[in-house]
Amino acid sequence: VSGLLPPLRGAMTSFTVNAILEETSKRDKDYRYMATSDLLSELQKESFKPDTDGEKKICKAILKLLNDQSSDVQGLAVKCLPPLVRKVHDAQVDAIITELCKFVLEGKEEQRDICAIALKTVVVEMPSSMGGAAARQLVPRLVSGVLKDKLEVKLESMDILNDVLRRFGSLLKPELSAQCNDALFAQ
Image 1 (cartoon, helix red, strand yellow):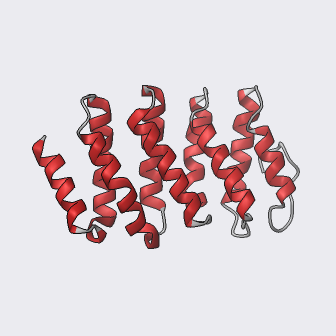
Image 2 (cartoon, one colour; image 1 turned 60 degrees about the vertical axis):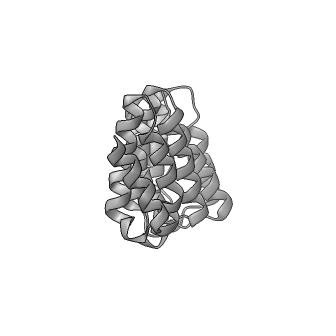
C-alpha cells in the first residue's frame, strides 16, 4: 500500500474501502493520486471481495477519477478497471459501460479521450460471460456514434466498435450485425 493507510492483513475491510474512497475526493491531487494507487493495490489482491454497496462506491469513485483534473490520476483510474471488472457483479460492469459510452458520445473532448481509453480497457478485460450483454448494449450506441457528424466521436466510436466486434462479434444477433454493416460501409 502506497502509504496513505497502514497495510492490513487479509481481506480489505469496508472501513479501508471507505477511507481510500474518501481520500480520492480530496482537493490535493497528490492525495487523490496516492488514494487511487492504494485502491489499485487493493483491487489487485486476490482476497479483494467487496460487498454490493462497496462495489457501487468503488465504481462511482473510479468513474469520477476518470474525469479528474490530473492526467496522472486519470491514468491510474484506467489501470483500476481491469481488476475491477473481473471482480464486481455484471450490473456494476453494465453501469460502468453505460457511463463511459455516454462520455465518449456526448462528453467534452478531454473527457472523451480518457473515457474512450477506459471503455476499450473494459471491453478487453471484461469476463467473456458478459460478452453478449455488452455487445447488445454497446453496439447500437457505438453505431449511433459512427453516424454522428463530429469526426472525433465518429473515430472513437469506430475504434471501440472494432474492439467490441473483434471480441464479441460472433455473439451479435443478425439485426445488430446489419446495423454495424450499414453504419460502417455507408461511411
